[in-house]
Length: 144
Image (cartoon, rainbow, N blue to C red):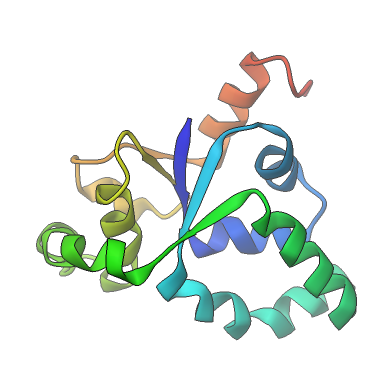
């Protein structure tokens, strides 16, 4: 499975040793995140440290560990799809345009997000965390 993850999914994997983190690390699926949105990860670093109880070094190690399983998609690959994504989603949620454009730039990808605004377009399938957990569970990799 090829999934574009949004910032909240990445942050969830950082904050807690959770099912989200387990799926990113152990599923063998291909995860993608727009490099041009990486500033969001740094923007919420303080919140992640506070909620997780990690120190700066632990945070850096965990982020690097997760990034071994996530491909950062370069801006030049996404930019040609921004206008198309903006036409579909820009008036609804401009912050999510980059994730839709990233999905457009990766063949056969879906979006993993719990943001309902992304579901207002029908061009790319959006899976919520509960859907991802079910799919992961069906593979026998996770017993709930």
